[in-house]
Image (cartoon, rainbow, N blue to C red):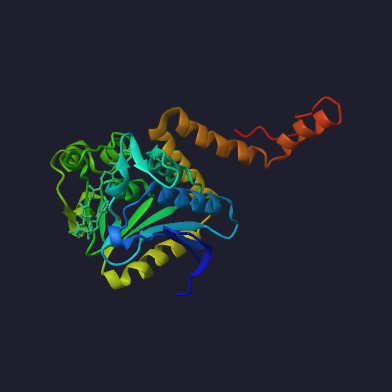
Amino acid sequence: RNWTTIKEFEEIKFEYFEGIAKITINRPRYRNAFTPDTIKEIIESMVFCRDSQDIATVILTGEGDKAFCSGGDINVKQIGGYIGKDGIPRLNVLDLQKMIRSLPKPVVAMVNGFAIGGGHVLHVVCDLSIASENAIFGQTGPKVGSFDAGFGSSYLARVVGQKKAREIWFLCKQYSATEALELGLVNTVVPFDKLEDETVAWCKQMMQHSPLALRMIKAGLNAELDGQAGIQELAGNATMLYYMTEEAHEGKDAFLQKRKPDFSKYPKMP
Ligand code: 1HA
């Protein structure tokens, strides 16, 4: 498969192939732990994916065969957050979590090894998770002095149920790919050498379907869980569709032509 580089970054790879963008955390030396700069680069890539007419699905993965992502880079954990080049302590992975959930295109986690701590939460918030047989899952927060009581807890509980979510966080155990599959934490498990083929196949299948339908389903599934922010997302999609109608254009045209709008001719669907 011939991935072409969309943009060069320092801590990630950002590539493209036939409608699919692939974002790879490229810090295998640290089991693909992220710094605030890694997250900044992923966020910039996600903005590009959102805007691009050529990109229909996004894959998030980690470099190598050891780790998807091992969470925040503990080497740069300081008082109040993780420190990047600008020296400011940040928890900017939280921004990325929200972004993955509200990106109006499917985001697929291709879990190629350890998905641990904040790295585990990243796969949890993706729309789908495709795992290789060597993948290992778990939270470590209470063991290493951290916790994610946001999506990392409440959304995890929506995925695996309250008892399991509490077990995952309170005991900080590691789970095999098979166990993750049984928990409903991942969609499928394949041998490592089939991981990318399988993930691309899932993306291609989604890409045969209506992007707008997928977008509305994602917004609807989010809306149920995300309160006002979720309704805003769904409502924004409704406004976008409304702007595509003649009826909405009549309002705009009447204003610009300084006349009364005439909405009488538009259908009132039952
Ligand atoms: O909880 C949050 C947040 C919550 C709210 C808001 C924002 C948050 C942001 C982040 C996080 C967190 O992510 S907290 C959780 C942080 N991560 C961890 O606790 C995982 C730490 N790593 C491990 O448990 C293990 O390394 C591993 C299970 C992923 C892999 O084990 P393995 O295969 O035995 O490898 P290991 O020898 O441990 O690691 C290889 C190298 O990678 C080591 O370096 P070396 O001894 O060769 O110099 C190791 O230190 C390094 N490494 C691994 N993970 C990290 C790391 N270095 C920095 N940060 C890491 N997370």
